[in-house]
Image (cartoon, rainbow, N blue to C red; front, side, top):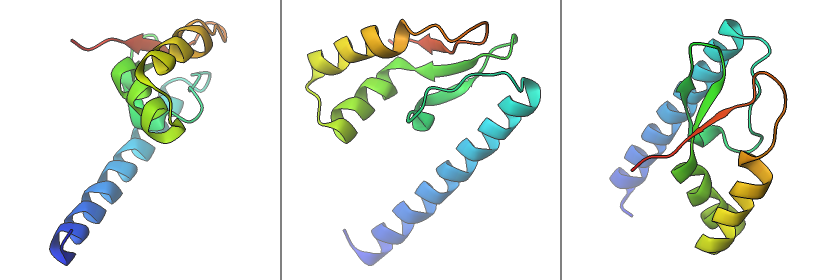
Length: 99
């Protein structure tokens, strides 16, 4: 990448990180008991009216593949058994599939 491209990428990354931190703060203010899926902040889409955090399944699976080096099928299986099925109380996150 050129220096201009690097700078643009860094600015966009910083804005996204700031937006996610602000979103997490808003969720925590709205519902202090909200549960977050550790290590998947980049997949947060928002929150529901009942205060549960909403995550993108597609983004979580992409993270598992890119960050953790899993193959597609392995990431799907890991998500299904270790994340999606985990019940952590009344404010267990919602996982949204995008078509």
